[in-house]
Length: 323
Image (cartoon, rainbow, N blue to C red; front, side, top):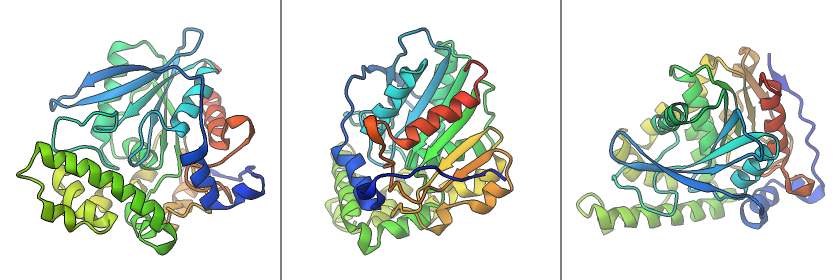
């Protein structure tokens, strides 16, 4: 039922998905946002770093922001979102995944597309230490899959969580991986692999018995990385088992709060299975918007505020009791 017609119509240059993606990732700058870091300890002895931004007025509403693969809380799509929300009476908590805050995490494991236990830890921390009456979730790419999986996999969703938005979410991880391995995405894949291998070498220094030079040399593709590290470090049989267990697509019918998914048609990272038309048509809570343009976490609009930033704000305001 909730299939949404998109009104997004970018100027000519941003109708190229690759240009929209590259501009958002490498060229866009966001200034004027102040972030305050808080470190929380996890039950397994590891830690997460949260970067907070605050409204000028005492806020009762909070948005938790989740970045994508090899991102962090200082990426423009995170800081741009946080800036717009704090200008509209929301506080913002931007989560850095394990090992993504500029400091290596303690354990051999790190983060992955289905690690909802860490999102749960953040939510529990907020509920115990803060006084927000309404909490909203917004995830980008990997973070979008994480949000949708959390909402549909059977967790007890606190009553304070009112709505969610996922942007450029690879709902089917295998499908997305297949796309990243195609020729059109070779530069993106190489960039991701470079960052992931760099972090794996950091793990090798800390855990020399678990990672050898031969292991690292054997990693040619992103799937190879998931076969060697992601699966072994996080309890999966192999990459395909990881993709199968952690894809949010299978959990979408169980989502019980209003959730908006915005995946652009020209997102070169997403295969056909990442556009859940059937699931949205049969769900009262999953709203699917598929703009013709936007690229991967792109969606440029003027005044340095993206279309999806405005859409998320509007969606959350429409589902708050204190607009």
